[in-house]
Amino acid sequence: MLGLGVCTYSVQLGLFGPAGPESGFFPFITGVLLIASGVGLAASPGQRLAGEGGLVDDPAARKRVVLVIAAVALMILMMPWIGFLTTATVMSPLLLRALEPRSWLFCVTTGGIAAVLIVLLFAQLLDVPLPVGPLGF
Image 1 (spheres, rainbow, N blue to C red):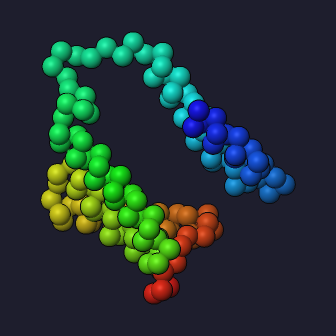
Image 2: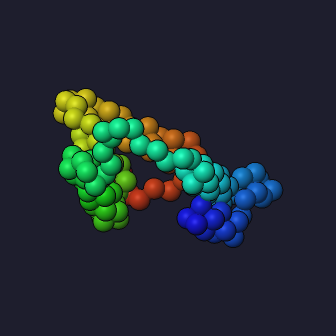
Image 3: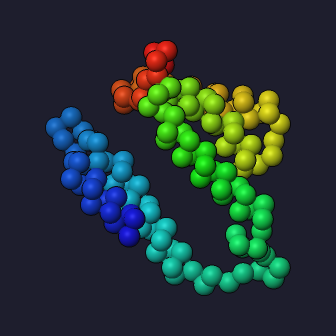
């Protein structure tokens, strides 16, 4: 259902124009992938391996899910005030650390590089406006 909603809204944004793909093109592809994933999951037998715990059974998995949801919510709240680059630079290492316990050096380095590459790709190369903070980045 989510994929169908994304596809419907993306068509309203426009898929193609005279200059090429428009703002609804990539959301449409995402919606199609969501639909395909949902259909694939619904069609799968859904058997569990012996001894495999689900999200409810594993406290560590529940903790990771809660941490990721909290971090994404915090990113959404922080972004309008301090901008995308600052928010992503601060929150990416925390998300990486929450998902898999690695060294802080690895998480900070990888998160910082990822944030800068995202800004270079979207803001510079694709000319997509990202939220800018009070410091200008």
